[in-house]
Amino acid sequence: MANNKKIIVSVVAGLIILAIVVGGIFLTLNIINNNNNATKKVTPTETTAKDLRDQAEEARKNADTAKSKELLLEAQKQYETLPKTDTNTNAQADIELQLNLLKATSTTTPVAP
Picture 1 (cartoon, rainbow, N blue to C red):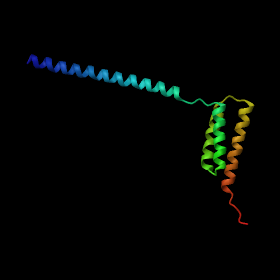
Picture 2: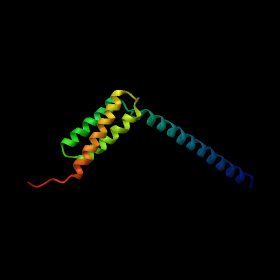
Picture 3: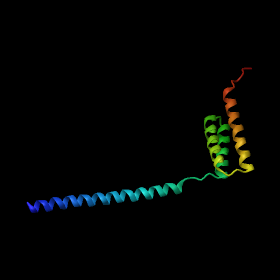
Picture 4: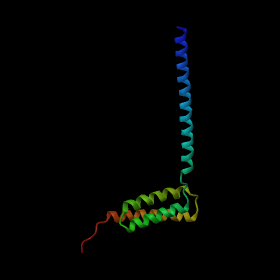
């Protein structure tokens, strides 16, 4: 009987130790993954926002207004996070005008000659 108790206690202790080790490994990998994700985030800069505007212009030239609008909205979000300068303010106004232009061209119907 005492021998069975020792075996049961040993198995339970082993399971507890195993659970602690697995939990520690899971926690460590989660922390490492979160740190990697934090470093991979793209911080908006004037260059990335300008690249988005250029891509939107290319999409507009290719008659893809939906993609153009999506890219302009993303560029607008990036410009809002940048510091307030004359250049950034002008770029925001330009994006607003481009969005209004896209909206106007999508609502007008072509007139047959």
